[in-house]
Image (cartoon, rainbow, N blue to C red):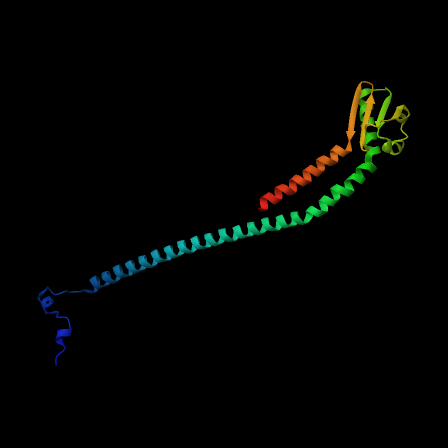
Length: 195
């Protein structure tokens, strides 16, 4: 049994012209094949390098987004953890501090008004609860010109200073309210950002 029916028949190609290869033409064929192979390898290397660069860029971008997200989470957590401390300070520490500083604030304001308004008598109106603290205002020469007046219409932390026609109001309660609003607004904005 023959297997010739399974094999290709190259008989018709035998009638072609003979190929002759010289050493020079063989070297040219080899050089051309080398150049094609080298160029194909170079193209593959350039493509692989571009793919690697894209992959590194994508990974770097993703890592930067992860770091940014982690930073934002950490910042939000720190701010949220500070909220009770700042609320406590605004509600308890600042009012006491403001009350203790009231005489100093009033003395500074009187000194400024005297520099601008000259040598006129000073009338200091305050709530009855603040009178004791304000009686301690300085031993300065201008303190002899200050007349303290109780005003039941004012609450603790409110002081009215009159020097001639000039009148200036000090309202530590309003200042504390503004600080409280600012702290509350800050934490509300932070909460909205987290949501």
